[in-house]
Length: 389
Image 1 (cartoon, rainbow, N blue to C red):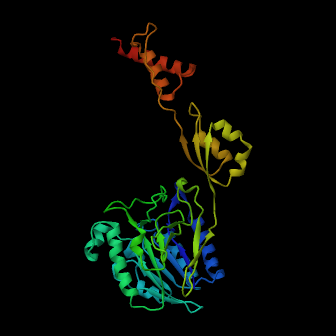
Image 2: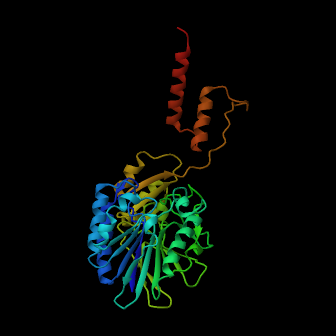
Image 3: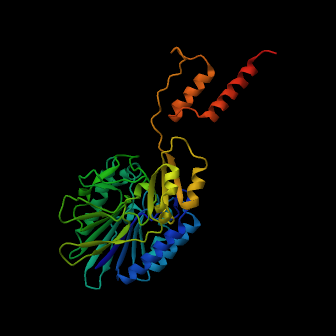
């Protein structure tokens, strides 16, 4: 049986304020074609379908397009993530299941698997665990106040149901921060912190007893050490980058081949990249004069300027060469320790000397002649204003 695992679409999200719905639409169209070409028999979306609990009309319309396209080939199993509203995403779930969209957004559906029989005769029991906030769900689950406890309690329900089913392979889709003893899992800036409401992560060992765990939440595709050779645990990662912290990610979806017995085979299929991400660091003139800059015209560009003084209209000048320059920061030197002193070394009392020292302290360079003239003019105006008529 062939299953496709994806997650964290975040439909409706922008990239540094720029609408990327057309990029997301291109992914949906690509995925719909891939499902047909690869002869996928089940698509699993492990949470964060939407970026907001109340999604935009464009986001809802795009989700409808995705569901309509994919379910013409195979059914879908979808869980809600921490960005989704379980109630909104799960609306009309019973009716939608008749059309191939199987939503798992509540505690009541945790132990209700979708049973899929593949063309090769393999039978798969696919369970969906929605994002479980400890403070909201621990009482109903009889669990302590932590993500590990509520997930373990949810998995007890899964294991109890699975124990009644002979001769099936098993899959669990869940949205959470899962570790397998490896604390090097990369969390990007665009992933919402899950620590509110209890300990934020849970060990992969809570999923013991199933064949494959399709995770959502971390945006970088990665395998997780499960502590058991019989259970595979993995994040598919998001299909698009949503911040420059994901610049090094290789975006993909995961295709699983599940045999009747024995180990599963997983491979990552690269997702289309609408705009590569790149960070450039240096002086503005050097960056603009670099012949290689023209080759980055189709990239999202983050620029870190190291000029000693802020150039005039840096973003405007950058976008003349790099039209998709979208983030600009200045790499400031540590503030110089500058003491305002008179010629004899005593602490300065002259306001102009103090003002010049402040400029050097903030910019790490002494004021230029124009700045000195402006400072002198300002000091003189203040002095004149303080003279009694």
